[in-house]
Length: 131
Image 1 (cartoon, rainbow, N blue to C red):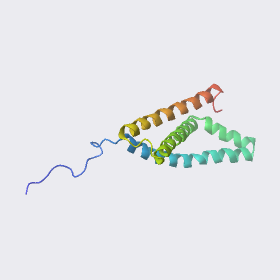
Image 2 (image 1 turned 45 degrees about the vertical axis):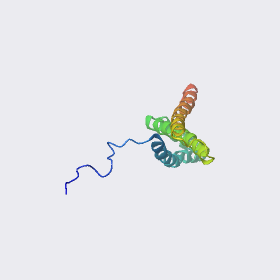
Image 3 (image 1 turned 120 degrees about the vertical axis):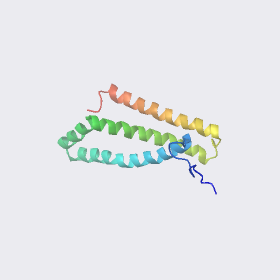
């Protein structure tokens, strides 16, 4: 019996993820990121309640390069999760299950999340930034 040298399943380097699968995994990841990001929001609220010095420390962290990256990522995760959640609501009522429709709505979700994030950060930066 000849030895078959082909792999039994596709390797990750060969397999191309469909957009819907990638967005589904990303939806779960952004849900986790939003839950973890709430720790920053709780810290800000607690520091605000604790007094001006404590709040100044929290604002300084948020205005740092690391804090800005966290806030930007958290805001993108929020908008992506929101837009993809709306997409799932349409699926729940039976719209958009075709392959072309699912692919198109996936692109809309990605573009909408980037546009909404850009708009929020444009407003933040127009008001003088985080600090």
